Image (cartoon, rainbow, N blue to C red; front, side):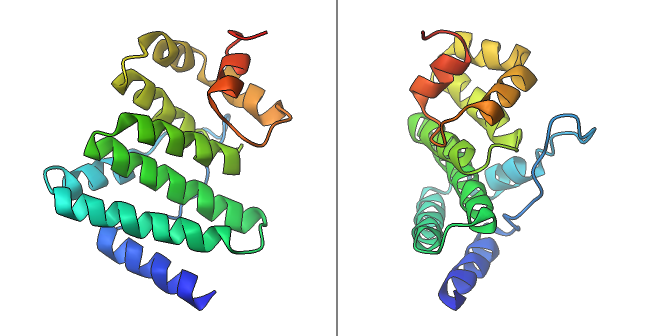
Length: 167
């Protein structure tokens, strides 16, 4: 575990901020805090070599977490790392990879609205405006549908089912 903790600390030092945060739950009366995404943009936009390194370091931490016994705390950290990785890919302009990361974040944490917001904007970035708008205008509805969904793996097929576009 010390290797994992050391890698997480090193990643946070490289990113210049903490990755760990509390989930944003529907009805919590808290607002979405965009500081993390803005800080990553500020740190990495136009710095291709550094963002590539940040992506690699984040992936390394995810691999280490996947080797741990899975419990709620490990899944939460995994969700946050996939969310961070999705943001890094988004900044790098690889919007399809960012979509996949946000879906993996949702697979590891059903009780957080933030990956939904990130996913929604990634859909807009890839030009899927109908999906963006559908999630945007019905965010809490789909958040709750995902919480109740029996699957633990969030993917495009599950999203289509939740959005009512698949029978």
